[in-house]
Image (cartoon, rainbow, N blue to C red; front, side, top):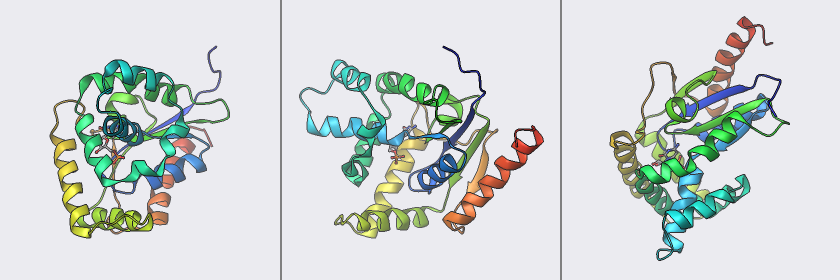
Amino acid sequence: MKRKKKILKIAIDSPAAAGAGTLAKAIAKHYNLFYLDTGKIYRLIALYKLNFPKKFNIKFLKKKIRNLKKKNLEDKILLSDEIGIEASKIAKNKNIRKLIYLFQANCAYKPPKKYDGSCLDGRDITYKIIPDADFKFFITANVRVRAMRRFKELKGHKKAITFNEVLKSIKKRDKSDYSRKISPLKKTKDSMLINTTKLSKRACFLKIKKIIDKKLKNNGNI
Ligand code: C5P
């Protein structure tokens, strides 16, 4: 059955630890949108690869993805740096990307009815997953600031890691995400750039909210 109501779709791309997840979550909550952190899907697949190296193939993944629920993506173990690095290796695989395309597109275009739309963040959301999004943002920050944020987050989860290790791994992931041939991270022309280096979480949220509210008001939506 088709939805009668037009839904609001927000697409966000960003390099690792730029604060996109926190912002996307806050935006989604404010506008009553279904939120999906697509990086978690790649992280979950990375975890499968590390946990089931012998079984790990497309057939095995198809079954897992068919039964994928958003709650499967909430495991704290997915946050580790090791998983992040493995996820960025997996993300280069065309067949794996194809396999999870539908899950992401469904979340974006057919969110559960109680929501007024969707908000997804990742690396290829603005041009592959939701090319017709109502709002597109590219969220970034200086690499050392990003590393410091991730370092604090990992410390908060009691992970034994140094700042330099985090910095190195973020640089490695940036290189891999920006330069890969399949669905590389990029800022599309129609995405708005939000640099969070010197902004607090609240200031970033308000900046994005202002942009969204202005357009919604002009379009007569609020
Ligand atoms: O966002 P997060 O750091 O959790 O993503 C982990 C990895 O998954 C990224 O480094 C990237 O290689 C990959 N990814 C992707 N496309 C997305 C989301 C994440 O390639 N839409």
